Image 1 (cartoon, rainbow, N blue to C red):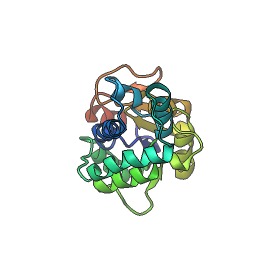
Image 2: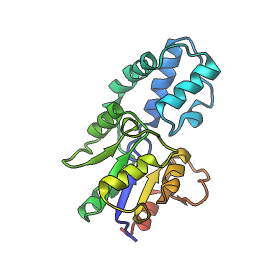
Image 3: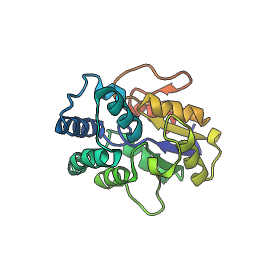
Length: 210
């Protein structure tokens, strides 16, 4: 059944940006003499910039102030953002839901700078579009606040909305917000209890009655 509102994660869900984030993070770490851990991707997937920074500072000795660190990472990331591609099938579903009048928003743990750059790169920008970045809330995912903020902006009850996210961190936030939560990982993996595991764009279309 088509929900009243659908709230989309961005990185890895709408746009294929996780490889770019990892490449920028690796380059930034190497630029300060830190060897990236082999499990870096799985440790940072869906996690906001500040907790990642705290992990790097605590475990790997990163000694730059946060503002200097994040500028260094984004200096690597932003030139690559121009090469971004949509996740296959995702934006098509977004646009079809929009044509049907379903309320939607992009709900991201990334900073506003990255949200805007990524959505511009894939042409997902239109008047009245609702986007929630990490800078727009007190608590990022896995806290429910970002998805609850989206429900408030869309004027719907959380129980009438669906959340779509590729990370366990994001799916946990959708569940905590009381939303029907679609866990659509880029590689097969077990989702958090209560989430609907999505394996393809076609699965997602069927869940939304498209």
